Each structure stands twice: as structure tokens, then as C-alpha cells.
Length: 189
Image 1 (cartoon, rainbow, N blue to C red):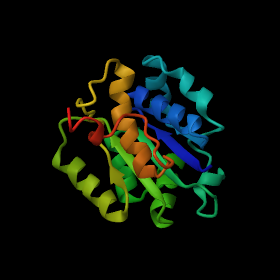
Image 2 (cartoon, one colour):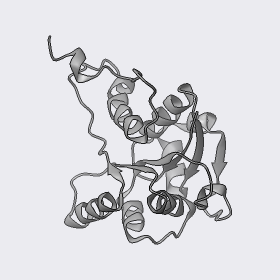
Image 3 (cartoon, rainbow, N blue to C red):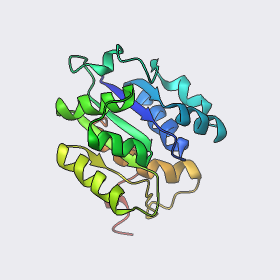
Image 4 (tube, one colour):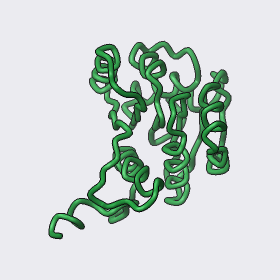
């Protein structure tokens, strides 16, 4: 299967990261994890430390010699889940001031899948302009906005409605695979 980079920032919503990593691993993909320092604090505070159990590799945020900093590494794409507005701004500006931002920059320049899941509300005009900028560069923005038509029964079910979109846009799902039923399952009911 494929290898993916999962970036985790200090935005609230670490459950989105752990569910993304869990499903990627369950689907047979490799997960390389990059977590910012505030991201580690949030993962710990929100009780999602099992995130690290799903990663094949955990890279240091300051390690610019990590393989994912190079376009020659064979990653299929990257998701930044959840993405703080500060990190979004740095990706949009192409600053590459840490490994997470550099890896996102590599995905954009190599035309690989890059999915950004912002976890903020409301959006300021600066946030919207940064989302526009990364979208024009090739990224896909998937706000952490779950759907309810599948009638999720648990927080994990609800979170998975967003994670399903992330996996779809990473091209990480095989034929006829999904982690939540699609709209066709509900439209006739």
C-alpha cells in the first residue's frame, strides 16, 4: 500500500488525527507522523496519546534531514489534521520553518495530495485568503464539519464522517471501501 504523512498541530481536535492514523493503518497504509510542540500538548491534554501507536515513524518537528523533507521520498500525500491557522498561514506563505510546513510544501511542489483540516471558527478574512491560496496551489481544504445524515451514534462515528472525506481526498480508500456509508445508502430512506 501507500505511505502518508500525518501532520498534527496545536489546534483542538486531536481525535481527528488519531482516527485518521487508525484508519490509514487499518487500510494497510504506512503513517509517518509529524507533531508540532503545541500539537503534542493538545494530544496529551485531549487524551489522544495512542496516536503515536499508529505511526510507523515519528519525525522531530525540527529534523530537516527527515525523508519527508525531500521530494524524492515516496509518499503518496499528506494530511494536516487538525490544522491551526498559524500553520495554515505558514503553508500558504511557503515559509518551511519546520518539518511539517516543509513536508506540506514538498507535497504542493511535487503535486501530491495535500489535505488540510482547519479546526477554527469563525474564520477571519486572513484565514479565508490563506485557504484560497493553498487551494490554488493544489491542496484540498476539509473543515472539521461532520455530517449527520448517517445518524452517527458516537463521537468516533461523528469524527469519522470528516475522516472519510480526508481519506477519499488522499486517495487512500480502495475500491468499494469507505469508513462511513455514502449518501446513496440514505437517499432512498
